[in-house]
Length: 118
Image (cartoon, rainbow, N blue to C red):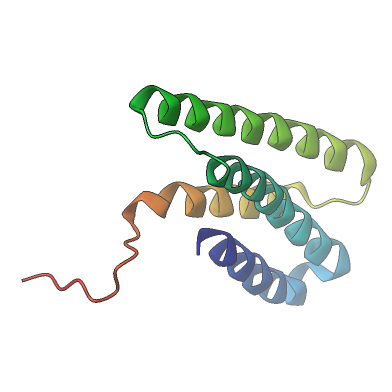
């Protein structure tokens, strides 16, 4: 659900920014969103492969997944900023930050849509 929200944010931002910043703005937004998407996907794959049930195993896997996510983010940010000369840095970093915040808000999302607040 969070990964699809990141994709929706990226596409909506790309459409909106495309009117003002042109092709390079759209590509910058898409690349910023994709950095977040790829790192979140790696995080989800590591977490979903967890088989242990002890608290220490859960914490260890969560820390490992977060470390891999951060390493992927650093590598992808560096690769994009080094190789794409016409990048709009504000659009790139802006969408990256918004999509990363969407990932961190996953703790506030409930799986049970039938919950009602009384």
